[in-house]
Image 1 (cartoon, rainbow, N blue to C red):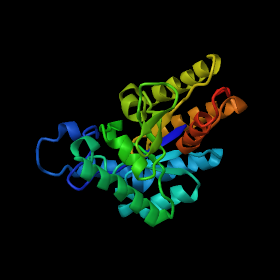
Image 2 (cartoon, rainbow, N blue to C red):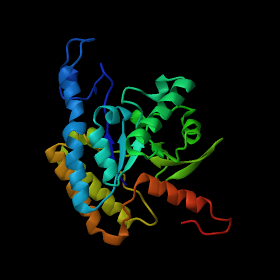
Image 3 (cartoon, rainbow, N blue to C red):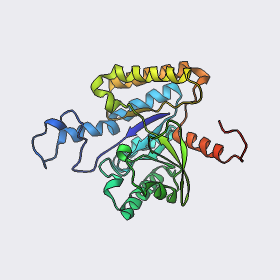
Length: 267
């Protein structure tokens, strides 16, 4: 699975891991440089990543803040037109479910549905919370709003079904090593970790998942994007041993398998 994070922060907020953020000496004063750095994903990085995916004929899941649709609709429309899956990623990166009561969390989820449907004509069926941090209510609120999968889980390697009062929700693991976490180690480490993980999964018995995660505002920059492309080359070299799938395709597969009658083999 290729996961592209297409994120934005609300006005007055910015990523604390931006290159200059730690050196910002004026609490309460907008850090214009870090805001600008975060917007690179929507203005530039997403287009580079779309070109890379198009050249390889691959589809990804774009975890997208609904604020991107509001402020940079052309970027979201380009993702949709290319056939990629758009998953809701909250209104913005600073709107975390754990900071919301149940009513506000429900409104946040539904606002994402309405925003993306109004812009693209398609409702998102998947969800990723900022920081992959959900609440005790998130799963039920997602199925209530028509979602079929969530990327907030990391307790198992393979997807599984979470029962909710409104139906099943497929739990899909988040990546342990993204371009954000690996940035300090260097772009080549990002490449090498994922190539070696793929090699391991191909040698190991049974199915495995490589969730290749990249952020448009981080890994959409030239050198990291090239490392990302080299990982995709390694994936394609594996041929039919690898199924490159969107999160929704994986969720549909899991739901189909779990719906089989008792006694039927479930790979």
